[in-house]
Every structure is written in structure tokens, then in C-alpha cells.
Length: 207
Ligand SMILES: O=P(O)(O)OP(=O)(O)OP(=O)(O)OC[C@H]1O[C@@H](n2cnc3c(O)ncnc32)[C@H](O)[C@@H]1O
Ligand SMILES: [Mg+2]
Image (cartoon, rainbow, N blue to C red; front, side, top):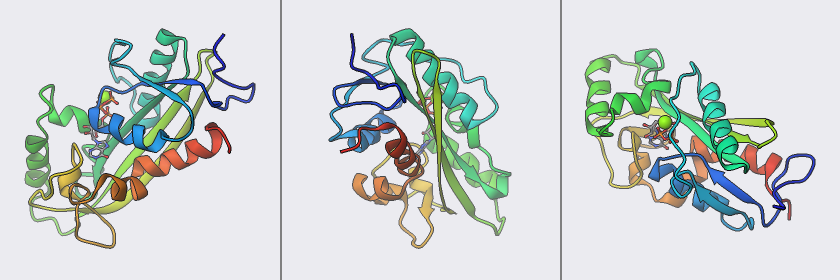
């Protein structure tokens, strides 16, 4: 028997948790955020889980779909993240299509250039990242948590850290992009970290 959870669906020390993501950048961020809770983390790749098609029309819908697929396949609690980069001048695009704008070859330079081209000279450079986390349990229970960070779409891309759209996003209050920041700086303020704070409070072992 796995000591995976208590009756109120909180992970306990010693629990195993599947990270239901195939994105190396997200997995690195989650590893840092999950350190110190005594949780054994397995990735979807470690378990050779398939990557489900993201057919929902919202971040929450896709996060639930990914977490439920992994929890069902692995028989373990699973944490998924559905996230995206949203640009005001583009009506919130690419949004839930952020990964698809980069295509199967994950060509983020091309996706960032497409945003730049479509934004053109529009004065409003507001942009934000959203992350919705879903913890799904093998018994069908799901818990979701949303985080957001506001800032600006910046051009040209800048910085060598991070992943995805990080080089073209500067959080409010500065001109440095996420890709200019250390992992710890990004993890202190990011959309994913904000969603993770809510997840931490509801679902991680309390000291
Ligand atoms: O679905 P999984 O397997 O988790 O991996 P994915 O890369 O397909 O992830 P999503 O479906 O959630 O798509 C999110 C997209 O938004 C981008 N994105 C999300 N969070 C980001 C962040 O913190 N920094 C930069 N880009 C980010 C990311 O690169 C993806 O292209
Ligand atoms: Mg995806």
C-alpha cells in the first residue's frame, strides 16, 4: 500500500507524485518548488506515459485532462500544469495555443517572431502568463489552482535562461525579462510559482 494520501486528499511525506508534463523547463521548475517536502517525484517521461491531446478550450480544462490521464495510467496522484503566454494586443493569444504556436519542433524563436509581427506597432504591450495546476487522484478527485503574472511583451528577445517565451516577457516593475533572471528569481514571482503557492497550502504536507 502506498502512503500516498490522507482522507482529505493532502499529500503526506513519503508520497509518490507524478509530474504529468513532458516540458523539461516546467519539470525543472517543479523540482525546485517541490524540494524539501519529502515527496518522491516521478515524471511522465520516467513512467513512459503518453502525452494526451489537449482538446479542452481552457487552461483549466487542459490541466484537468492531463492530470487525470496520468493519475489514471499510473494509479498515483498526478500534478499537471497547463500554461500559456497571453498578449493583450492579440486578444490574449497565443494563450492556450502557446505550445502549438511553436509547433512540433518547439520553434520558440519563430513563435516569438510571429507575436512580434502580429503586434506590429500597437501601443499596448501588456502581456501575462497563466498557469493552472491540477492535482488529480486515482479516485477521480481533482483540485485546481491558478496563478498569473502581468507584465509587458518586449522585443527583441533578451536573456539566456528559462524556456519558451521567457525572452520576450518582462514582469511589471522592471525591464529584465524572465530569461534575464535566475531560476530562483523567476520561481519567486512566476505564474507557476503563484499557482504552486495555492497548491502548497492545500495539498502539500504541513510541517
Ligand atoms: O503539456 P506539457 O507536457 O506540460 O508541456 P507543454 O510544453 O506542451 O505545455 P503546455 O501545453 O502547458 O503549453 C504551455 C506553453 O506555454 C509556454 N510557457 C508556459 N510557461 C512558461 C514559462 O514559465 N516561461 C515561458 N514559456 C512558458 C510553454 O513553453 C509552452 O509552449
Ligand atoms: Mg502541452
